[in-house]
Amino acid sequence: MTTEITEIIKGFKQFSENPYSDTINFLREYIEVEPSGEAFFELGKALFFNEEYDESIEWLQKSDDFRSDAYLGLNSYRKKDYESAICHFERFSKENENETVLSYLMISYEKIGKWNEAVRTGERLLEMNPDNRSVKVRLADCHFKVKEYQKSLDYIDELKEQQKFPNYLYEIKDKELKYKRGMALFNLKRYDETIEELKGIKSIEAYRLISKAYEKIGKPSRAIRYLWRIYERDPDIEILFEISEISCNNGFHQYSAHVLERILNMDPNNEKALEMMVKNYFELQKFELAINYCEELLEINRDSFTAYFYLSEIYPFFGDVEKTLECIEKGLAINPKSADLWINKAWAYCNIDFESFRKAYETALRLEPNNIENYIKLIDVCGWDNDRKNAQKYYERLLFYNPTFALSFDEIYDDE
Image (cartoon, rainbow, N blue to C red; front, side, top):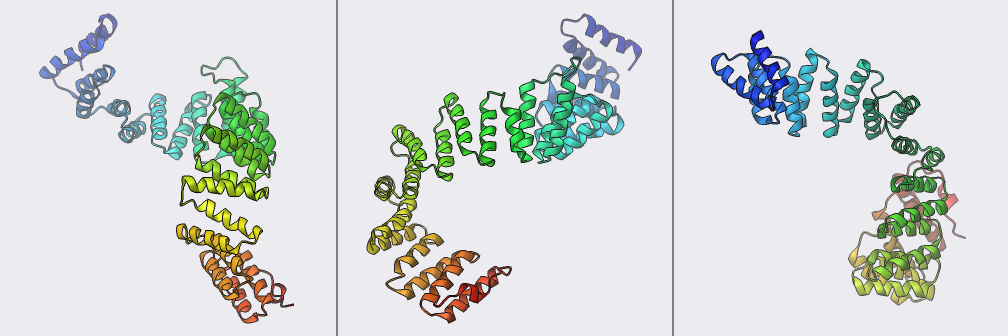
């Protein structure tokens, strides 16, 4: 393009109310008279800045100027066609390692979840500018995505160190950085440090991570305390379920039931809450209450496997074999592959029909062939009936599925 034309375009940029439109109109007329690769490039570039992306791409593709790839990449990026953007940015970067283009290349990789490629591009950017904070932030996130938590933590610590100095262009909020550090520490299983890092952050996300960390180090009461803080800000029923589950899993069954009552007051037919109620009262051996909640479950859902399973566990305490077997058969009609229910069936028959006991137990073993505990129990029961032959058969099957099992047959089998 002649010096005269270049100066005209500069004049448009300086004095026109809409310099890009004026430049575009001028270049269209110019190309009709004297088409050239450089004119195509300038027109494509002007169209890009005027946000006319499709036409910009058409003209840039006609240009042989290597810089066209940078703008073709930017057009594709604006159109959210990140795969095409990456192709053009990579092609441009082979000719010229431009920091802006590489930044867009890294972000494009992030947009489509190619975290390793984003990391490699970020490292190229840091070679050009070692103090680029925005790149370090993105690298911390990318390493986290590929579960390289220590590398993520290293970048976060670099950012924290830079944060001490006031003259950086890109400042990151201290709370945001602390939360990122807390997440990295949590995934590195450094739970005490996670808690210490996040204690000063009063956000739902921080409270949730602190709660999980306390649960990991065996302090369920503190985990529950932070879940209540979340619930105060966001009274979501799922938070109550989390509190109830942690309580139940750690033996606080009465407290778990108390929380579930709040849920049932809001939603009396909540099946999940009723199921958990049954479990809590079963563990507390408050069998009448557990039966009541099983009956409520069955009123809502006649095919509630949970109700039939727990009833099959409860009725033996009352010596009611008939009701036990009735609930077992109804449960197996719903889920015939429940090994636990087949074992309940076996024990229901234990004192009245040993052959039925053995067959039910064998069905459970077929469903869970690696369950060592079940083999040991069945071998032990065979000893009660002086059935050494079947006991030996079960022991050989146990070794087949668990070849590293250490105890000998005689250490298990007891016929006395």
